[in-house]
Amino acid sequence: MKLTIVGGGGFRVPLVYGALLAKRERLPFDEVVLHDLDQDRMERMATVLHGLAEERGEELPFRATTALDDAVEGADFVFSAIRVGRLEGRVVDESVPLSIGVLGQETTGPGGICFALRTIPAMVHLAETIADKAPSAWLINFTNPAGMVTEAAQQVLGDRVVGICDSPSGLCRRVARALGLRPEQMWFDYFGLNHLGWLKGAHDAERDRLPELLADDTKLGGFEEGRLFGGDWLRALGMIPNEYLYYFYEDAVAHMGESPRGAYLLESQAAFYEQNGQNPAEALQAWRATRAERDRTYMAAERLAAGVEADHDDGGDGGGYEGEAMAVVEAIANNTRAIMILNTANRSALPFLDERAVVEVPCIVGRTGPVPVAVGPVPAHAQALVTTIKDVERTTIEAARHDSPELAVRALALHPLVPSVTAARKIFEGYRNRLPELADRFA
Ligand code: G6P
Ligand code: MN
Image (tube, rainbow, N blue to C red):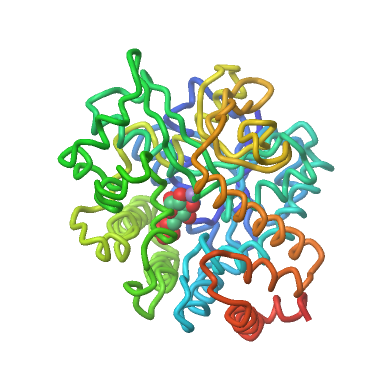
């Protein structure tokens, strides 16, 4: 079995490699290939991976290449976690809207639209390469904005593209823990789009336990989303939103300050990548320290704005980004028919969207890939927001595929977090001014 990791110099690659080491028995990959355009970053990561293997006394050989055809050829699974324009691009995505008082965030709002405009052509190219060199491979997509990117890649590869995010499963684990239950014993009615979802039911063998959780301020105070949104608003909704809904429900911009999160990450990761030349153990230690800082500061501004003091937590063992990735591979390779919340084509899971719309819902995952379950009717406000954002996403995909400035402005202007057409035009102008590649394409 061959696994290709596209974006092999990326910061989260050691998480995936660590999970591969841990799952060796169940996932016998005999070839692992890292691909990245940047040889230096990939070497730095390779050293960290050697550090991990040494520490565990295990071996999982891998090679690294900058040639995409070679990396992808004959793969069974391709993981994609690329950042087109790197963190420098994220800084632009976030700071341009912030400069006129509009939300500046990696995936939500204008930042996500600009990120998608940059990323979609690269992902379509990857999908076409897979269609050519590894037509039976599964593309497991972490590349953000994951919903839009997955839908664009599906236009080439159909259902063999699966989009992943760690936030829905994290929410479910935190809710289970708050209730004193084990998540694998429960059913979670979660629905929406990537970074735009709600938990509307959390069932154990007897009943839906969400109402009792919503009624209990102490329990709600014990986990992130409970603290972020507060009991009163959660009871008004009757659901628990994904943490990214914070940007729709609160005036996050007022608390974000001038320097976007991307700038902080750029600085801390640049310091890590510059230490090339360390031995594997040192490299691993440096990576862990940088990673711990990232976790500690994740959504810190938002938590501060909500008056929340505790740190981010991922809800306990067995999950996270890498856990999700391995669970998908395991479910497909071993036909386990596991239940996971994934980004996949709707079929009719959300009856108000068409069948090709990529949605984020519980799926049964086996040899033939994820099959979404029927979610059924949802509250009108959620349906309205999902419908609006799906239209923005599709307009963005079209804009990216046809290099259309008109469609790009339309996507920005129709996003509920952009206050006016004038603001949308200013933001797009700002993006073009600061990103030469965008200026060329969207002339
Ligand atoms: C979560 C989301 C990812 C996102 C990340 C951002 O894990 O699910 O999609 O990329 O947060 O975290 P960062 O530390 O880069 O702000
Ligand atoms: Mn995500």
